[in-house]
Amino acid sequence: MQLASRVTSLRFDILTAASLRPSFSFRPYAFGPVANMSTSTSTSTKPSALTFDLKARCSTSKARASILHLPHGPVELPMFMPVATQASLKGLTPEQLEETGCRLCLNNTYHLGLKPGQAVLDAIGGAHKLQGWDYNILTDSGGFQMVSLLKLAKITEEGVRFLSPHDGSPMLLTPEHSMSLQNSIGSDIMMQLDDVIQTTSPDHARMKEAMERSVRWLDRCIAAHKYPERQNLFCIIQGGLDLDLRRQCCEAMVERDTPGIAIGGLSGGEAKSEFCKVVDTCTDLLPEQKPRYVMGIGYPEDIVVAVALGADMFDCVWPTRTARFGNAITSCGVLNLKHSRYAKDFGPVEEDCTCTCCRPKEDGGLGISRAYIYHLAAKETVGAHLLTMHNVHHLLSLMRRARNAILEDRYPEFVRSFFAKYFADKGVPDWAVDALRGVGIEI
Image 1 (cartoon, helix red, strand yellow):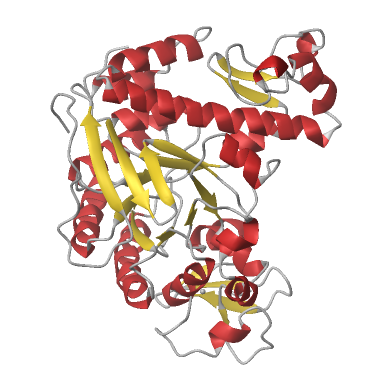
Image 2 (spheres, one colour; image 1 turned 180 degrees about the horizontal axis):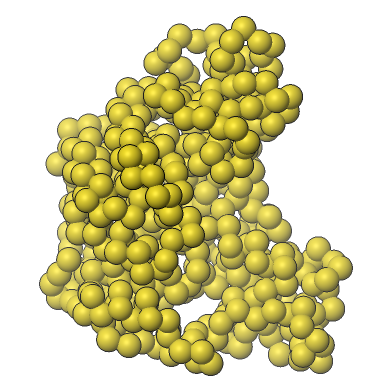
């Protein structure tokens, strides 16, 4: 794959161009009252392709509203990024994704390195042109997929060694290769290669090693990044659930002064209470004038709490994946529309939803009923298509409502209303109550 070069003099196939280039010279592989704030840019002298405008802060919690100006247009924060893994959001065309209000989606570096490959990306001029997407793209580094999807992956100081999914031959992903491919993709935000391990791992020494190695790999990513004036490299905070390691990593990463900062290594099976402690600890230590991205978060309740803890950006495959199983995300919780109770339910997927799926025909929508989704969900792909349309719109609409609440200094009220409705039948989980109480919000 174009992600990596062969470890030995084996037959090369995917990394033809990159493996012939010399190393390090790869081509493109918390709080006061709400107030309007003037644009405040980083004092860094390093080149950057973004401007971060902090517009308002919640007077109670650490929630904030801002505008992130990127090469392909402005993005309002806080925001959720739909995941278009292989330069395509499963079930939606680029035009339909645009209609949801999405202005920043995520592409997967690992999968784009496999197909279409770096040579094709270079030839067409990047992933924006490949997928016909005129707005912003964020790409991961490929490291997470190396470890989570592939067998026998081994991490060394050099990089991630793994077996090719095509023919089983040994391959290697380095920070330099990851930067090379992401430069070819042309993403507006690109992520460093980091050393990722399960948050629940009991091996503290390995956790510390991964954190320290992620810092060293960031230095190599910075050195290999060829276009900092038009692509933004974000660092990734590691350290597992050890708050001291997280603090050490925050300090080291902040010193590197990247345009944005991500909190990684979560969503790995840890308790939600531990997840909240990590996010809360990190946001306390991160610069106010830079975007904060919590990776892999997509459940509505997780996002609403993480916003209160001071995070700005989120991504997850869950909203689109759960749609393919017949599940609709609504303000009252997740509805399994494959259940027979919906066979004669002729109401919209969600009342008062303005997505194309739910909106009445007289208002320019499709006027799709729950009964129709029930009819389709088990056997026709169009059912997944319609629910994907709804679920993505719902998450983006949730973020817009959260942002407006912050701008109007009523985020605590927004949070209470959200949880009262979303968990009406089962009660608000204790982890959310405790985390929100920690930033002054009682629910």
